[in-house]
Each structure stands twice: as C-alpha cells, then as structure tokens.
Image: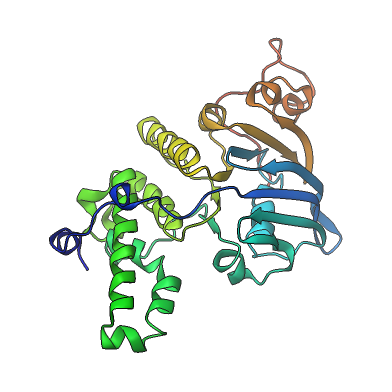
Length: 303
C-alpha cells in the first residue's frame, strides 16, 4: 500500500487515534556480564544500573567491548557469565537465556547496526510495514485470513500503515514514503533505520553508532529524534556512539568501557572529568583542565 493510498483510505496519524504502543515502564539491569572468546575476555564483569526511560550511552576507545555488550543484549551472543534482566509490564525476561529472535519478538528489544541494513529496493513505507510482519502474520492467521480478506486482517493492515505514517512524520520522511529506501540520502537512511526499529513496538531501543557518517545538521536532527522517543514514549535507549558531541548532548547517563572493563559511569559531567576516562582517551598525562575530549572517540584497537 502506497502513502497516497493510505491517505485516500482515511488512514489517520496515531496522534489522533490514541497512544502508540512501545515504550512504557521497561527497566534493564545488567549484572556481571562477561563474554569470553577462547581465553580472551572481550567483556569482563561489567555491571551497570537500570536503564529506564532515559538515554544511556556506552562509550570507550575502539576495541573496548561496546558492540559485544550489544550483541549479548540482543541475542547475537550468549554471554559466558551474567544476568541481563529486562522488566516491563509483560513480565521479566532474562535476555541471556532467550533465543536470538525471541529477544526482539517476545522481550521487544529493537536494534540498529553500525552499517545500514535497510531493504534498498523496497520503498520507505514498505520498509516500515515489513518491520511489523509478526503482528500482520498473526492477524492473517498465517496467510489464510489475509487471503480471504477478512476484517481482522484489514484492520491490522490499516493499523500497520498508521504506525508507519506516524514514524514517517516524526523522522521527516513523509515526502519520501514512496521512494526506494536505497535512493535516500545517507542521513535519511539512518533515520529510517530508527523508524523501522520503532515500528516493531519495542520497550528498549539499542542504537549502534547511529550518528556515524552524519554531518552536524543531520546529527542535530538525530538528537531531536532520540529526545522525542525518550520524552514522548518514555523509552529507554542504549546508545553506542563515537561522536562525543552527540553523546554529551543527549545522554542522561554514560558508561565507559576500556579493554572490556567498566572504568566509569555517571552523568556526562561526571564522566567528562573522571581521571580514568581521561587516561583511557589521552594516555597517562591528564589534560590541565581535567576534561575528556569533546569531539571524537579515539583509538586504533579493533571493535
């Protein structure tokens, strides 16, 4: 269904149709997370306080273990040790015990990746509809009801388009709804990835370097979008990012890793002035003003 067809059929924005699913009172607790590959610990006894309804950034030099933490949280890796408890109204989910696909489907954890992974030959709208395939398949009775065109499936399809239109509006992509996703400018593709993740109706959003490759104007648009998700949807966001202007500008809490260990966590101001953080970024000699660098995350180690 195209965007023009949706308008013709009277599909309204969820702003008018009621609250959008997703978000709510979800709380993630990470305790003693350890991930070993052979004899090497990529993550070593990392714990951090609950992330609930705020933006938590995970930063550190390249190779610090940031993406490994995300891979454990989102089901790509099974941690060697650790408890990853996600509490929300539907119950408690121990993420370390779930099969990978159930982390997204049942625990409702959504994720984006360092490299863009859109469906480039699908339209922007279709990318957002396909993100909702689980609920559409259930509504279709796994194809039978959809083939018969029964009301249950038609209603679910309209709701899916409503949700897609909502995120098109809030990512400023409405005019591009019928364009192929692969033809979008790079910054628009980044925002589309976040919109697609939000169309899965998550309770926790994990973003792996969402500002990578963005210019300052696009980074500012990203900041506004993430603050909107936090404030309006009361959703916790975990963020890996190398652009310190983004991290310091939007984060409520920052966790700093170095060689797989947590060396600091706190507010942006606390982390900025932590001597351990300064040493990790700049070496043993502290800067005179006691501030960590405010521009780019550094280091040449592998991620």
